[in-house]
Length: 257
Length: 220
Image (cartoon, rainbow over all chains, first blue to last red; front, side):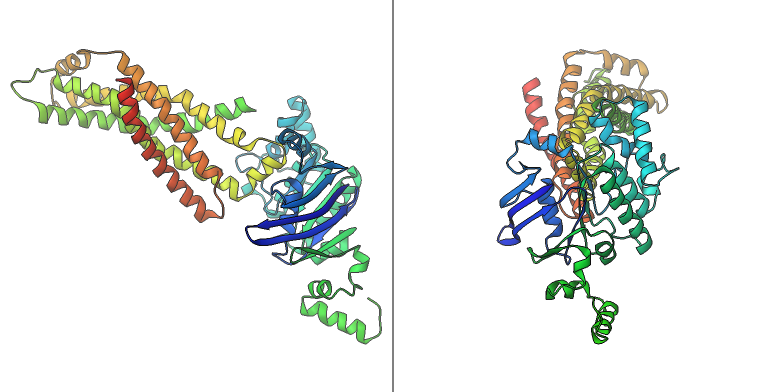
């Protein structure tokens, strides 16, 4: 479980995160949603320690991450996996070497065991026959799957995904979402996903936090999203004309969202 | 893992530079020999002068300082753009998240790798310069090969070889660390990576020239 308490983050005079307090639960896909520039990525970077908050606390199972020593943070990070918006695969390594990388760095496995484990992870994300390919030779969806395989190679307790569906078609996005959800359940991880993809929100949102201009505006589950009375949330959800019209039709016909 | 990176960097930064080092050294050695023969030749000068000055220039300045300036362009821009691209595509963030000391993992093998291979590059460069000088003698018939040999052997001070190597080690450190710093601290996108790469080459070249003055004074 990850607990965030009164988190503030400013860049010079600009306050990007304002008093964020929330809990990300174990074994659930926790979604952070919001418009571009609302502070989702900054919040995630604060959670993983890529940015230092101005004030507040981030507790990993009760352990205060922000006040940890450098060494403690490094040890803590070995319990984390992260999937970046751009996949962030190492260009100079093949797909298999990318997945093996954390194992090479931090495990005592033999080479044969490391290869076996890496292939196991690639199988888990349904990626076969791409072992010897370089990241530049595979599609965006495959790159994301390799990133997931690399992130789970060391069985992390916490999985962070920064817009995992960005740049992917709806069908591939769905595959990635399902994969993230099943991995979360299988390994009982605390998974946090930054997204503004409404399919993800409705499909895998077990705990959703809506950020608006740096503040936590709303928190709930996917079944509550549609019926929410929060104006900013509904404006965000029903941003497209198609959804707006559908919603109006439902309301006009006296149906319940 | 460090050993693997170290060997890879030695190959990428050092071994891959041998070709250009040999090529440039050959022609510079030849040109210096021709210039010395044409411009210093005089009935008052001993016949070994051209060979002697060619050797001293190659050994004292070209093979260490000028060659490192050339390498600052080739290797420096390579390092700055490689690390800079890794920074803007979040590959360095990925390393940090994994708990890997990204600076140590990416930069240290480059520094140690080039430091290891640099003495060999200096020796190859000096040797190739002399081959270039002989080429002007045998092929261009600029001067008799015996005169050249006499000059190359005249008043040879072995310390100059060590001086050249010691200087090149300082320059190797500059060539790797300065561009690595520029690449590692880059922010933004591809334009900034390009700018960092240019700045890295300019800064490391200026630093090589400045330190050359001090090192020459210190070691002479």
